[in-house]
Length: 341
Image 1 (cartoon, rainbow, N blue to C red):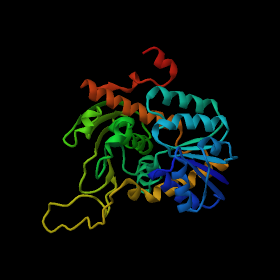
Image 2: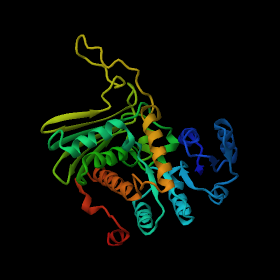
Image 3: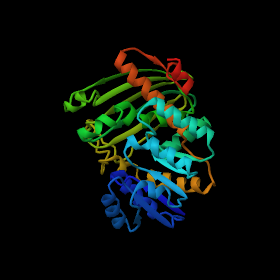
């Protein structure tokens, strides 16, 4: 199988190494807006590079992986689908709701599979809890707590194109909440604050946020996120049911020090980045995409799935701005809905 990868920054180089080691990937070709960077990464990984992304797309690919900057995602998805190339794209699929809806509609009209990169769906902890919820092992679910806490903030230059904390960071929680519970979000109320570097405020963003979600079966969900978690990169979920509780991320790497006398757990080592925290999930995710590209399995996370998570992020951003709850029914799901706003 000949796979092309566009975008050879940090996550692109990371995915390139993973893809190069997978069974069934016979030829991996990289490209970037900066051809020199693509060639350097290709040399490091031991694969080849194309002179441009356009040349890559026209190079007889069996599959295409998008790890370019967020602003390029939508155009690249459209370009690949128009060439009938099965495509993997890191989240988000677009910078705004309107373009995300347009891509979901394109996907619905097309027979070309598109797999969006929400890697938590391939983490064994989350899949274990999903199975427990589906099987009724923990009874009826009444409360979910989800958190994503980055150890350190991104560079200031990243913020203007990030979409904001809810769309960039918490969107992973919004997707995995749907995945684990099998339910949809009905209403949100969100708040945010800045206590760190001023560039967050200057970019119209927040460095810390919290949201309460009400699911369509009245399950209550709390979601928190921050860019300043000096203890380490901390991503976890607790699902509380009438017959039991299960947690994800509650292992020896948990970035918490107990205040209880005599307690030495967790023992570490801690994680310091999302790539370290989810390494096995990333490998499983790209392995699954190879099967999607072969046509042996459907996409495990479609553009339609990404749209639902993005709609929740959009609702939270609107709620934070207005100071009022927002119903998901008021967030468009199709182009026609946008036209009547």
